[in-house]
Length: 105
Image (cartoon, rainbow, N blue to C red; front, side, top):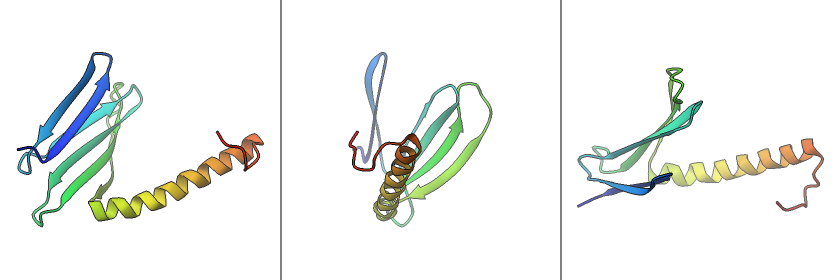
């Protein structure tokens, strides 16, 4: 029975894959300049873990930068911080472009 599930969509349609607690699941999605690799597995304590990497793209520059590991508890905390970061970044970009703060996209 699958514990992990993944899907992706491309020019040839959608595909899905499953992983068990024992096998885990991994995916690498990339463009020419960079990509993202995610590896999900069950750790010895019984928690689901996602390891996330920034990778080189199809041009083969050869890097694999570890960004972090997340469990469900860490993901919840990270999401709160990430949302604030993106909102601040958007506000800064709008100010640089002269867009008033109260204008919606």
